Amino acid sequence: MQTVKKRILVETDYVGANVSCIAAERGLVFVDSPFLPKDGLKWAELTRERTGKDIAYVINTDHHYDHVMGNVFLTENVICHTTAAKGMDYLRNKPVLKEVIKEAFPEVLPKYESEIDQLSIVSPHIAFERTLTLDMGDATIVLEFVGGHSPATIMIYLAEERVLFTGDNVEGQFPYFGQAHFGKWKEALEKMLSMDIDIVVPGHGPVGGKEMVENYFTFFQELEEEVKDFQRQGLTLDEMAVRSKIINFFPIEEIAAQDLAGSWIGAQYKSAAKAVLEEG
Image (tube, rainbow, N blue to C red; front, side):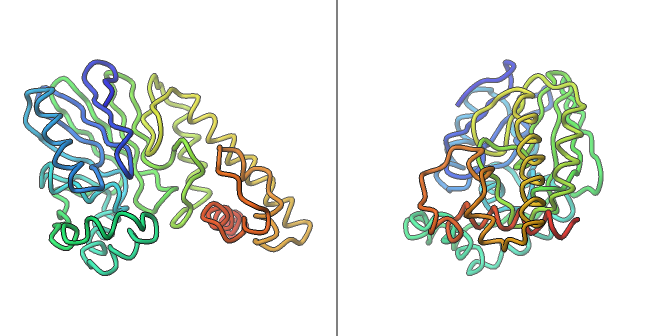
């Protein structure tokens, strides 16, 4: 756990998404929640001990399971986008939830299946469409829907400290494109670049500065150029994944060329390429 700007606690080492806690005059405001039950319990205990404050809200940057499963260990006062609220309804189907967990973290399910079966997915207390501002006394927290990574992704800006929580629109790794809208994602990054930001807390990976947004925007530009060039050459999506150079923009484990198209990162590249082509 690290401290950012004196009153923001950030944990980047839990399995799943980054989680953060803003200590404000009117209580603690969490950004996303731990994926594993044991981490949710630990995070609630650690933040209360460190700050001596009660929990006011947890804000979810999207509805994906690794951002929302630990809400129940923090508070029922959940805030998210209206589309995320619908997505959480989907996660209440436990066979579906366990299947998506198994796909990404096959080693996790056998260990935590009974706890997941008993886990309650909290219904949001507040759902909003475009923007929402929380006045927490000495902290002004601005929530804004931007989409991109998912149809429910929001960004969160702590005005006093100029800290931006990007959700999974910025990460320290090759992004997941399963529900992505490529054009909206680029627009979200452009908006972030226009903002007054000192610190960026990404959805996954280490905390950094505005250069993280700049790096992601460069990646999106180069990815789009490469895919359109491949299209002009008449390549299939599988051929694009095998011949791509931008696929190595972020460090990845070495994968044989013949296996690349069928790998996880190959699947994300093909999803991204498909989005680029469909959106023109």
